Amino acid sequence: MRGPRWLPLWPVAVLLVNAAFMVSISRLPFYGMINTIDLALLQVLALVVTARTAFQRGMTRRERRPWLLLGAYWVLGLVVQVLFFAAFSGGPGHPPKPGVLLAAAITWAVQVAPMLACLLAFPVRAMTRAARIRFGLDMAAVCGGGFIALWFLVLAPALHSTLGSPRTITITQPVLNLVIIFVVCAVMMRGGVTTPRHPLTFLLFGNVALGIGVISVGYVLTRHDVVPSMPAIDILQHAGILSLTTAALLHRRGVGRDVQVTAAAGHRRPTILPYLALGLGYGVLMAAALTSQPGLWIGLIAGALVLTGAIAGRQVIALRENHDFVVRDALTGLASRVAVYDRLNRAVERSTRTGRPTAVLLIDLNGFKPVNDRLGHAAGDELLVAFGDVLRASVRSGDTTGRLGGDEFVVILPEVNDTATALQIAESIVAACAAPFTAAGERVRVGASIGVSITTADRLIEGQELLHQADVAMYHIKRQRNEHEHVVLYDLAMEIDAASVPAPAAMPGLDPAELAELDRLRSRVAELERKGGRLPAAELR
Image (tube, rainbow, N blue to C red; front, side, top):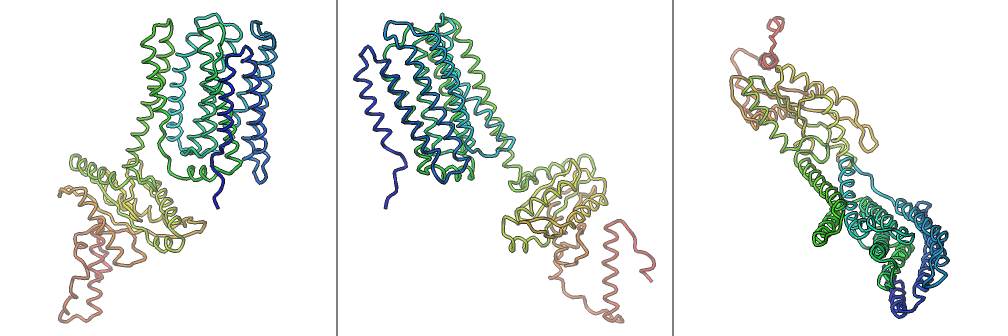
């Protein structure tokens, strides 16, 4: 069985019937009064639908709040229509009542407050610092494009005319509507709305339609003393009211609730709003170039500067994000494989020039796979992030910490003093790993195997080879399976695979126990030589 349509059709039918009626009476002398009554009836209808949505069963207080505020918006709208009806009750040819007209103007301005509160009551996503900057630049572009259009159509002509009360009322409304449209766009972008099947989309359409209507009236008022009958503009305002009503209907039917959650949880999609604002702004500038109104270019140039600056700033942020995406590991925030190779090559080249050695630590986590298999990939990612933080805290400020992939990390120590300093830093990383980590709410323990390689003054070496040497040393630890050995300095002898070397032939006069002791002493001497020490005399006896 098919469910209800996501877009109700009766508001469209009401709009079509209402439009035909308004066109048929547009030449009557009491058209303005009939239009005021018609607007009031439409707002009564909108109030009823919004109230039914706000008091629907099963809604949380947070879900109810936007629609209660929208209901307050309709109540104030009815008050405005009643006051306008009273102000112009004298009929055509009679001046409006100034006191009542002023009350209508104040109420009309106050009506913006519940609409703004309604929009701000919708849930939005948390944002990073870079996302907040990008969002602010997007909003600056939208506001700049809207201001250019508003300045060209209403504000600049108004500054060069003697404004009476009706003009003042109508000119202030476009500014307030622009603020509402600005807030709707902001909430849609922060709420992750990327589909027309959402109440916020119809709130945007409705406010844009109402804004175009009042801007059109303001445009006419700045050039004429009275506003003639304009059914097209009135129908546009009716469409705006019905669009806002449709937003409440969609929420009542549950349409858009699941869409909002999905969009907010997914990846951020690029928005075209700043570029639409750019097109609008420069379209108005082209139109202004064909006119010659005094003072027109002051506001246009100011708006164009804001608009262009916002778009340029947005591109700078986008380029920086793209660069960070390449040079930073997406999970841990450490240097990526590409960045590691680049910085390693530069460090080795600098060592060749200055004579100060560069060391590389290649780190492999011990015990990571069991944690990842038992607790899941999310817990494994949490453990990798935590180890990345430990790694950053264990090195010097000028060192590079990176992730090559999986549970394999690297540290580049440029211009290290000597081998002992590199080994000391490696040991500090091992010591930091001794403390338990938290993954998926559990305390887990992992270790680290660290292979160390360092450049020498007597032999030129490339960055890739230096990293290979650290890799050989690290896997030497893995092969030894010695739980007390976690850090090993690279030695050329490690390049020979132990599994491929045949067992030594028996030496005449030495029994197996003496051969084992000889092998132990050789290993001990090699280890001490790598660390710059000497074998104690007691061990030679």
